[in-house]
Each structure stands twice: as C-alpha cells, then as structure tokens.
Amino acid sequence: MSGQSQRLTVVPTVTMLGVMKARLVGATRGHALLKKKSDALTVQFRQILKKIVSAKESMGDIMKTSSFSLTEAKYVAGENVKHIVLENVENASLKVRSRQENVAGVKLPKFEYFTEGETKNDLTGLARGGQQVQQCRSAYIKAIEVLVELASLQTSFLTLDEAIKTTNRRVNALENVVKPRLENTIIYIKGELDELEREDFFRLKKIQGYKKKEIEKQMAAARQFAKEQLAEKSLHFTSVPVADARHFDMIMDR
Image 1: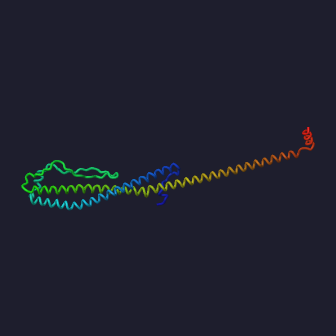
Image 2 (image 1 turned 135 degrees about the horizontal axis):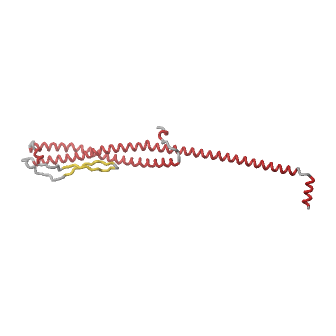
Image 3 (image 1 turned 45 degrees about the vertical axis):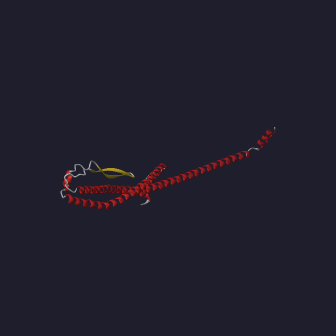
C-alpha cells in the first residue's frame, strides 16, 4: 500500500500537526496496552489448556470407575435399586452455581458445585447393598465434580479464544494501519509546512531584493539631482558679470 493511501486527507497546519501527534501518542499507548492484554490472555489461555488436558485425562478413569460402581451396586442390590434410591431422595443435594472471574478485562464464566441440605446415608427399604450404593454415589459425585470443572474450563477456553482473536485484530490494526497512517500524515504535514516556510523565505528574499533595488534607484536619483543642482549653481557663478564681481569685492573690503 502506497504512502498516499496510507495517510489521512488533512489540511497541513500547525494545529493539525499537534492533533496528529496527540493521536499517534494515544495509538502507541493503546497498542502497548493491548499487547500486554494479549500476552496476559495468552498465558491464561495456555494454563486453562493444560488444565483441560489434565481434566480430560482424569475424566476417563473417573467415569470408568463410576460406571463400574453402578454395575456393582446393581449386582448387589438388584436391578430395581434405581427406583428405591429415587424414593428416598426429595431434593438435589449437589448443585452448581456460576460466577465471573475478571482476567485482563475479560469476564470468564466459572462454574462450581456445592452441597445443599442433608444427605441421607441410610437407604430405607434396601435389604442389602447399602454400602455399595453409597460407594456408587461417591463415585458419581467425583464424576460430577470433574464434569463441572471441565465445563468451566471449556467455557473459559472458548471465551478466552474469542477475546484473544479480537485483541490481536486490534493490535494488528493499530500496528499495521492506524500508526503507519498517522506517521505518514505527520510526515506529509511536516513536508508541507517546510515547503510553505521555504516559499515564505523566498518571498521575503524577493521582497527584500525589490526594496533594495528601489532604494538604490532612489539614491541614484537623489545623487543625480544633487549633481544637477551643483551643475546649475556652478553655471550661475560663472555667468556673473565682471563689473558686478568687482563691485562685490569693494563691498567686502569695506
């Protein structure tokens, strides 16, 4: 892209030069801040990515353990254990709530589980297998914990990914479009102001030369006039009669 298309169309004045310099300073500061924000988001992004990989690796083992515990509970307590458990449960004891975490100006959603209410350990109506059902319940609670953590990490991961893309686009726009355009505009204004200064200097030199010539003409005319006056006076003295000259000398002797 040429410099003509990279600069703004402005009137080259000193005021506009100050405005463009102020804009360039603001763009430079904004670019530095956005660059720091992008770096901070990238660091957080990589940390979340490591946590996601670790959670997914542990999720396989936990889900396998919970499924095996359910199979054991069904084997010990019978196939109708599901209906017996549901009869003894009134409200959910394990719940999930959401909150927001601010990272470099980006609000990341966070999900966390909490226990609410009392948990009945005795399973009324179960003739056998109560202990195995409790083990199955503990295994599925661990699975829910991992799933909630993974959901929080995945949501934060997607939010950070979009924020990083947006921030990088702004950084690239400031670095490759806005700042070069302002710099080229400042160079253009400085060049135009220098050209105007050279024109004014040349104009002053021409005016000074014209005035000097006029002064020289006037001085030459004055000298010529003085010469003519002297010539007329000398001509007048030489044209005086001899008798009048003698009479003048007698008067002076008296």
